[in-house]
Length: 345
Image (cartoon, rainbow, N blue to C red):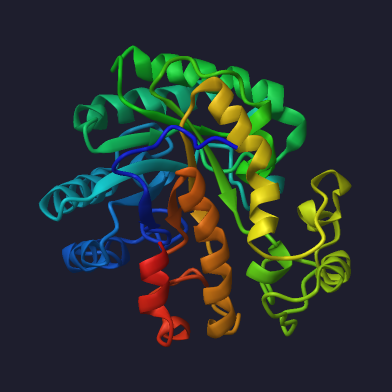
């Protein structure tokens, strides 16, 4: 397989999850969860960028008036990143009517009104932040879940890109596919509108390993633990038992999986790499990581395996996540291996 088009300045990064997305919506928390010292610390890790998830209701009220505190956080982060020579992906993590981790409360794809609001959100964000296009990439929406909306999502994404292009002809734009930005959904995306569109995917595979004991998965036993690597058959059986319809790619014969190793990621990423190379599109992994319940000495093995494939094919990426959210790299679960993980980001 050929390498993909390299995303210079965005090859090794870390997410700032839990700050102005999936965090507490109160001023004290927002102003103190991430500070300049955190960005300085991240820069010392020799990464080149951060991915900043943003929820719409942190930057806009229900009447679509701007919430300046939310925008102040974005602007502060931009200034801190500039000071410490980091770039940024600005990711709209949730939009009005769309919550990736609460599909029961999401009606975005049924509502033209909500879609129009989405376009207005991006018109505003582009007007505010595309002027930083030398160090910022705009990611239009995090993790579309339902595989049945793939065609509809292509249409919505195209219109959103057009809205942004009316503001900036060349700010870079990230778009991902369905099934939570699954790497297998890259092939379902429309060809890029222009050379400044980037394809993204997320990778938490094997999910049974990276999400062992995850309390937010209804079918998961919170006491369940599994090592890395274990036999492929063991991963298969555990996935069927604890992940149900989220068992993922382990059960798909088309990949020819027989073991969990670097070869697993090679096979999993193959189609996306080939599609990106054929379309001359940059490929970016916006999230990947291991839950803090896993044994540290085994987490590092997973990072080594996925890193080998990122490096081999020139795929930029941002680990999930810097702080808290059950994956935070500065938490005590990673004390023994933090330096090793940082070296592999």
